Length: 431
Image 1 (cartoon, rainbow, N blue to C red):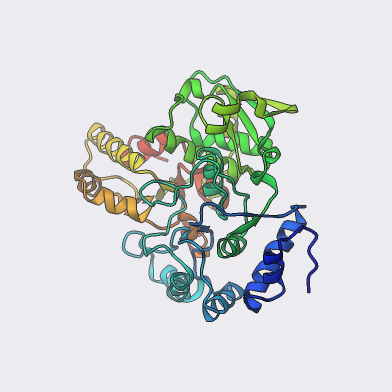
Image 2 (cartoon, rainbow, N blue to C red):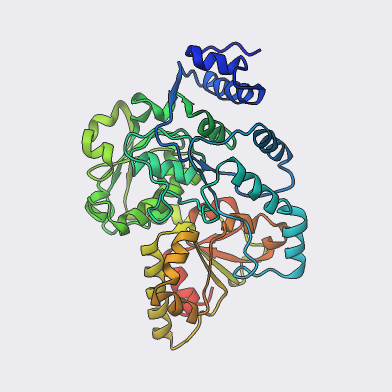
């Protein structure tokens, strides 16, 4: 039996010794070992019991995951609260595939999807709509409060919860977040602690214009890597209120810091909750500095490699929404595409364009007149994860344009600024 380094309560040690059965003992042992690796002195209670799982796809290679889920189900073990999970991988109606691609998706890659979703339901999945990387948005309803301790995975969700909501969660790996949600306990280290939330970098924004969220996040992520940055000057450009527009900006910004680096928490002076409360006291005395101006933003943008097999050819597919778009962003993109088509005299987009959002946001949007307006442009609306689409080796021949730095980082997709994406899909420019 594993002998823990951390201090456990008598109840926790009893679980480790098998008082609640062998499966719960394994769960406790795994979480304790995980905490011991990072020097956690103890376990602390999860105060926001709705978890978020990163593993949403029934890929055949994940046999140990399916086996573990079966053991949980056989033992009658569920999470303490309901959980959400990352987006589904496929949507043949709105993200069409050729027969060979569909064969690879359905028979080889995600053949276990239906079975895995049944497992998720039995262990504590919130509902059939609970598939989104942006589950913290109000429409989905998995929104922690400031100071809440979580057991989540998914880099973009964790960085948003830590930074914008002021909750506390480490960047957990798959299954660790599920085990923490079952126990209602997580190891106390890293972003759970006050000291672990202090900034090792002071980032000074000197841009004249609002920098593209995805590029600014990319620049910071690549510079600070896993460290916490304290960002000064951005609030002067995007405001000091967490309204719908700012929430969308920070969602995209944070996802880029987390994927282009490994940021799990950032503070923005005058805007995010802990920065408003403590200000520059959050910055460690030996913090490094990074100055970002418009020239630096452009330098970072121009540094992105083009991974297409035939880079001289124009794009043939566009993905917008990774992470999933907010309701405000969905409305904004609809308006911009409509206006862009008016300017070019076209009725429909000139390239296959797919926008992604959360199922609950899609349902809300479909009840508005703007849904029909978007459909009239030829754009497709889906709730999948674009990354899961690009994981199919046959889709690598697609020359994908995207305004997502996360999708660019994890695939062969080519990044372009929002305005460039808009001009391309409405036919203002040939790319």
